[in-house]
Image (cartoon, rainbow, N blue to C red; front, side, top):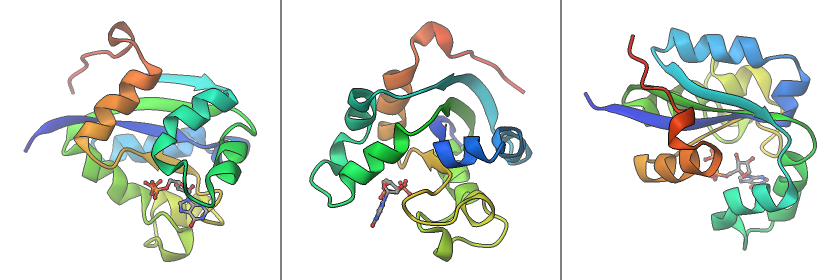
Amino acid sequence: MAIERTLSIIKPDAVGKNAIGAIFSRFEAAGLTIVATKMKHLSQAEAEGFYAEHRERGFFNDLVAFMTSGPVVVSALQGENAVLAHRDILGATNPKDAAPGTIRADFAVSIDENAAHGSDSTTSAAREIGYFFSELEVFARTR
Ligand code: IDP
C-alpha cells in the first residue's frame, strides 16, 4: 500500500451548512490524516486557475461563480492510497448517484454544488497541493 497525499476542498455549500467538522471527522475515520489546512475565500483568478482543465466546459463559469461565493476549507490529506480512499468517501460527482453514507450523498444537493472536491490522481494531487500550500505548510505527520 502506498502512502499518498491528496487535496480536499470543502466547498462553499458545505461550509455554509456548518459541516466542516463533520467532514473532517469522516476523513479521520477513513484513516486519512490532515497534514495541512486553511480556510480561504478564493478569488476569481484562483478558482479559474484551479479548474483550468475545465475551462472549455459549459459549466465552467457557474463552477467558478460557485467556488468564489463563500469561504472554502482546503486541506492536504495523507494516508494509504489517499487519492482513492478520499474519493471513495466523497462519492460520485453527482450526489444523486453517490452511494449512501458518502459525503456528497449526505451533504450535497446537486452536481453544481456538491460539497467537496478530491484530487483524481497522485499527479493532480501534487499540483493541487502545491497550488494552495508551500512545502513548509504541509506537515509530515504520521499516525
Ligand atoms: P470531481 O469533482 O468529482 O472530480 P470533475 O468532473 O473534475 O468532478 O468536475 C469538477 C467539478 O465541476 C465537479 O465537482 C462539479 O462541481 C462540477 N461539474 C462537473 N460536471 C458538471 C456538470 O455536468 N454540470 C455542472 N457542474 C459540473
